[in-house]
Length: 204
Image 1: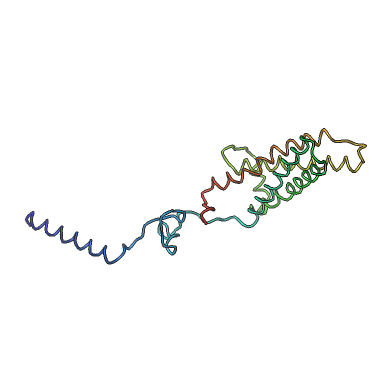
Image 2: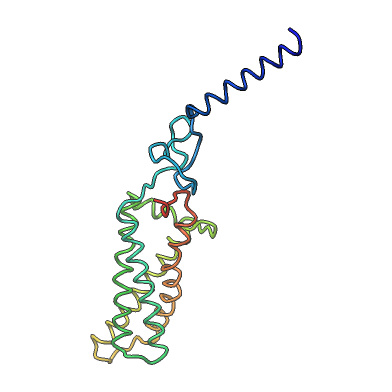
């Protein structure tokens, strides 16, 4: 076969490919994650490698958003209570903020443990502290916040139950300061948890 015939054959095949592409789509659309900003057919958006999705679907149950809300509200309440006491605001505001923080601190661990499935999974996260893991930081923060918020509320309860005869002011204020510090972290670290995950919750 001469060079001219090879060139003609190549041009013919190239022309055939162009004609096929003009009248019919390619057999495979390619790989495109659901979070891609490019326009896409929703029927094929979840298609991945050999029919498997590129990203794992969200596995969180209702306990996780409930934990985010309850823990965030409790942490913010602890911060508000500490600021109110420091600035000399209404003592009723300080008392209510402490008890809201304590109630959220009591409800948050059961919600997180319920999502994990078994209590020992939560305890396993406390074996080591890993600053690069949002879950590890969150677990330790929750433990510190729950204890300090509960101690602050208990100190207020002792003072009111004894009509001021037993004052737990020093203990209560110290616990309140710790609960405010850890509450600030508790109410904001969930954003880091969402941003660091491989599951694009925000795109769904």
